[in-house]
Length: 387
Image (cartoon, rainbow, N blue to C red; front, side, top):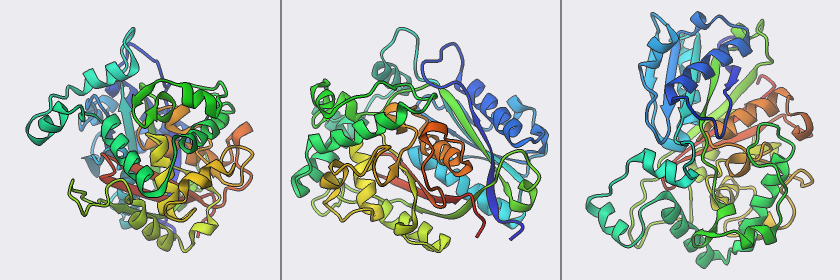
């Protein structure tokens, strides 16, 4: 139990429309901030796991940027939006085995350019030129995450009767949480009517169904419970974890759009933690789109399959609701740091440092990551309490 894994440090750079800095610079700052947050000397870090976003600029060279020597663990991790959860899982296993003592897990990206639109900057940074099968679908206008997730959402709508207005309730609830978060990029309240009148991105998605584009970096430090006992911040215990990689194909028998990897990674993580979904107090869900949050709620078991639409429209979400979901505003309203967005807010909630947005109960916190077009999924169960 002394080597039980915990998160002991959290580092967040300035996030959002922050120009003139590269992703590696954001990454290095985030790791330094996480070490300072924990009260550790940077050179006590002996493991480093990196993940990068659209610009793909952060890699193994971050070790040299930080001046770290004689690392016992160093790797790049890439499962897109599920990478943050995966990095924490690998770091936890390294700490438990004794392979490393203090592992930094970091994500950074800088797709936004001054005087360029968010979507345009992100697309240009990705440098995508579809070829092969992707080229054929691109010729039909299906060439981006927006259009592929729109297909997934439309399939859910046709199968279960989910409506755009129901998705709008997710956007409204998360904006209400963001209004309480000084780090959030968007804090002005919105209504379902505002959601419905926002411009189309890719039907059935309006602008307010889609996540932000952000520059910045976030890092966490994973260490053992005994090492964390004398550090500056309360330890956040990593009680359970799981992954899922469905391997969807675009065939007639595919469950694409109807079922996500949460159906596998969720039960795995909950079983490891020794709890059920009914024990979860806070859910920090990956929400690249409102639809992604909705299908995750269904597949984790917060509501029955196909009932996500009525569930989110019932008033259960938001600061006044009975289920604390995406308490910082999520990627829709707070900041878009891939899987580090839900993970960073989960750490803040587990420490009881949420301020005006602190959930009333925080004994068990579920964190999800989603990567690709529902291709990858990660789940963490965090708690302020040891097992």
